[in-house]
Length: 115
Image 1 (cartoon, one colour):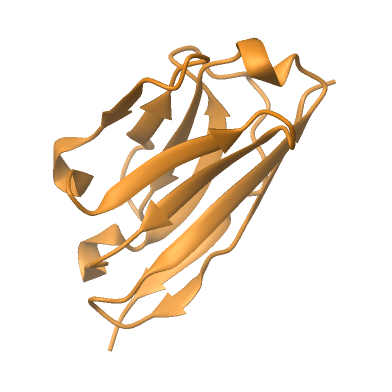
Image 2 (image 1 turned 60 degrees about the vertical axis):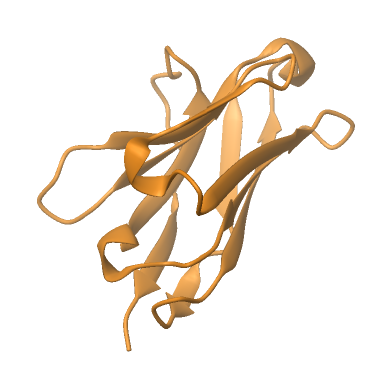
């Protein structure tokens, strides 16, 4: 079955950077459009960034100019480079397929932006 394993989160000060990774298995990764989603406490899960099988990307308005999504098909891995982090970026970050995510999600990785 599809497995998604997110990593790379942590505590960072405002203005700092983090790089998230998502290792996948159980799917033909190179054909899959992938995305990063996030869920803050008390809020619904939202799309942060998506990348097609061909490398085309889309970003939520709130992260444009700060976040970059990329993929390595040889490693079945998708990445999220997050720069100029803000307190409002604090959330659990998940990866999944896009635009229709698999029903089973990974454990996510916590990102906390705080001084």
